Image 1 (spheres, rainbow, N blue to C red):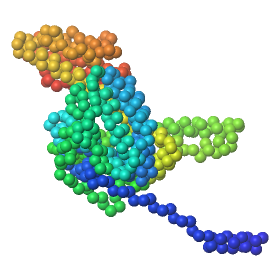
Image 2 (image 1 turned 90 degrees about the vertical axis):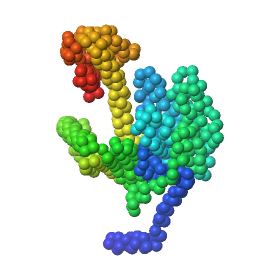
Image 3 (image 1 turned 60 degrees about the vertical axis):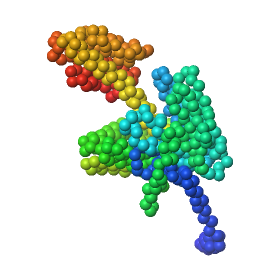
Image 4 (image 1 turned 180 degrees about the vertical axis):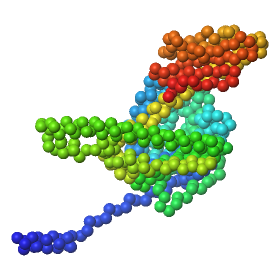
Length: 517
């Protein structure tokens, strides 16, 4: 027996020595450089400077295995379609916009002609937003698509972009408008009297730009810049966002990665008070997260103990099930492979008087799992869930804040009307009609002064039963020097809570009960 075993081992050893080693996997071909025109635009997007820029590096995403250039667009479009479909129930034109957006995203998802797309950028290469407000963004922003110069699909890509721009233009114009596509030099432009300005697509070698003619011309007239040089061994940029608000400060958010993915946020140039407040909010969010996770684990541990005891006492339960139940832990239920715990441990927060830095790392194992899911043709459910969980609640909060602006604006108008009445009559007005305050129709809020209330009149708005949320908040003295207060209440997110605002002689609206919290 020993002889036979020795002989077998000898044969195996000879076999090992004579079998040639497997050929090494050839390295992937080097990524071709971007065209000079595309290089210049993306250098501008990544370099520090006034305005803002968002960059998505699809080459780097592909190298990580998160998706090929075509599947990347399809995966992002799938997420976008799901989110906008849910948001399509918003009121009025907002709901129509998101319904149309969901259809456009679905078209992108189903259209497979994206193999030549390399990078995506949105640039606001000026500080006009600071002077003119956010309304100027459509006039100064530029989008950029870097593509492979020799890709046979780029002509179709350009045609698709033009068609999507035209479809989007129909949505942002009023009913009965006549947007049309015209050729202006090399630009393909959407022109319509309701747009206010044309929106154009400008092809360049290995690059497609889109924006207004003014914005496109201003971008191409800027002097060239050199993109920040990468340090040796530095992980490539996956996604970057920078904002320069001049005296108000600067911020940069960057996702980088070669195996693991690191998120880094850096804010600087703001006041020490703002930095301290931001750091306090971040640390509170982390504390709240830790407390929530501790409560989750405690409840899971209790439930796990009950299930384990039941299975152990069940004579009909298979032995393999009992073994699996014995080996299961609360940590593995909540965080199967420990990725969330690793990401939490990686969080770093630091600050100086005028800057704040925050970073966290998604471990390489999580990135690899995500890559394998996408390689098998599936969209990572966790990724879609996380993005939806972030996007939808924040959009709802954004909508609620926009609705709150009605109360602040109308309360200030009522305050001005009351002050003007006092100056003219030397006494306080007793009713809204008396002081000449008449808010626009379509109100979400009910406004109260003294014993009078103007109920909301927007479709589906709610008027509270007695006692009113404004009861006791509508002071109205007798003489011109006495204090007065005007109250507004409404429901901005369809729950049971009321959003209550009051303005008095100070002239500044105060939110006494925030419906968003």
